[in-house]
Image (cartoon, rainbow, N blue to C red; front, top):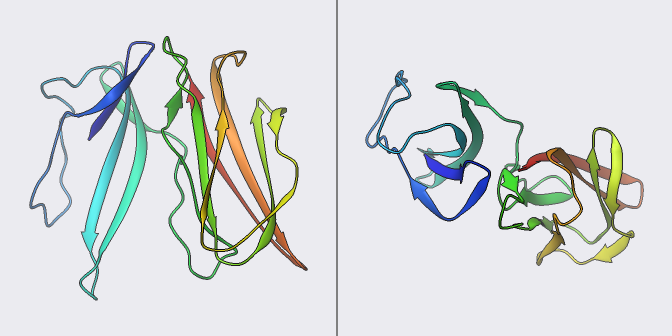
Length: 175
């Protein structure tokens, strides 16, 4: 479990506040520990697969009033069959006192025309022009928080190749 914020400040160097090693079954944690305070966290899960590789997933949570609540996804699992191979945001939060920028990264499995749209409360605050990208290489788009208001922002990627269309949406929070 990695802490992302301290008050309205986004932490530069992520701090691991809790670790659960060698767990083989489900368990219940009381939510307490050294350095565990209200704020935003990323919980990283790693499980072994049958072929010997590892499946790694990250889930955003918010601790408020001593209770953890799962936040909307800020990272999508990788796919080999979809037009969009991977799509993720660098963190579940951005902005804050340091005005930390938001980065949206994606990788395509096939060449496609890609458009990214950033919305807040259903209103478009930023959009990129539709552009052709090649397959394989990752791309990153930067969103600066200078004039952005606090709240949840949804980043939607839309990829088109001929008659095939793939869309995915992730959520982040402006501190």
